[in-house]
Length: 343
Image (tube, rainbow, N blue to C red; front, side):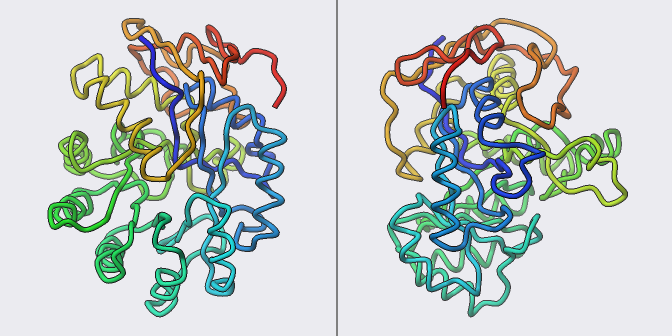
C-alpha cells in the first residue's frame, strides 16, 4: 500500500538550545523511520523563536541539517508582538501557549491574547496550546476575529465536544489529537510513571472514547507532539513533560486501521491532506511511502532513531509496517534503515 509522504504538524526538535535531547538530523531521521517527510516544529526552544533573527537562524540550520522538509512555527510573546507581521511573511503559522508549557512562552491576559489575534495576519493559522476553559477562550477569539484557530493536542471529552459544537456553528476552528491521547489513559500513567508525564496529561477512558468517537468527523489531524527527553531527565524528581512519538505514530494508526477503528482513507486525510490544507504547505514531488498493512510485529522493529532512544510503546504489538520512503525521487528509508544521504 502506497501513500504520499506524511505530515506531522506538531514536533519538538529541541534546536536551538537542548540538542542533547534531539537535533535536526536525528529528529528527521526518526521522522523518515515513521513515514513523515514534512514536519512543523515548535518554537519553545532556547532561545524561543519570537524574533525574526532567531527564527531565521533556526530555520537556516533546519534547512542545512535536516533529512526531510522542516518548517518552524513562530512563537507568540507579549514582549515581541510587534515582530509578528514580519515573522508571518516567512513562517507557516504562529504558536500561542495559553497553558503550561516547557519554556517561557506562556501568554497570559485577554488584552495580550486579543492583540496577538489582531496582529497576526488573518490568512495564516494561529495554533493554540489550550486546555479546559482555555479552549472556550480560543473558540471565542476565532468567533470574534473571524480567523482560523487550530487547537493542538486536544485530550478531553468536554474539549472535543466544544470544538465539535463550534464547527457545527460554522466557526473557523480546526484541531489535532495525538496517538498517546488515543492509546494511553491515566491507568498507563500510573503503570509507566514519569515516562508518560506530558502536557496535556493522560486522561480517563471516557475521554479517550470521546476522541475516538470524533476521529471521523471533528478531528482534522493526527500529530505526534514528539517531545523527546533523555531517560536520565525522566528519572528526575521533577521530570520534564513530553514523550517521543515520530516513530510510533504511523504504526499505532495503521494498527487501528487493521482493527477497523479507522479507514486507511481517513488516515490519509488526517496525516496528509488536512495538514497540508490547513497550514498551506507546499507539495512534495515524487515523495511516497510504502507500507505492509498486514505485517505484525512487536514495536519497535528497528533501533530507534530519535536521540532520546526510548518509547512508551516499546513492546506493543503492531499491525502495519513501514517498508520504504521515497523523498523527492530518492529512496531514503528501506526495511528499518535510514539510508546514507546528505541533508
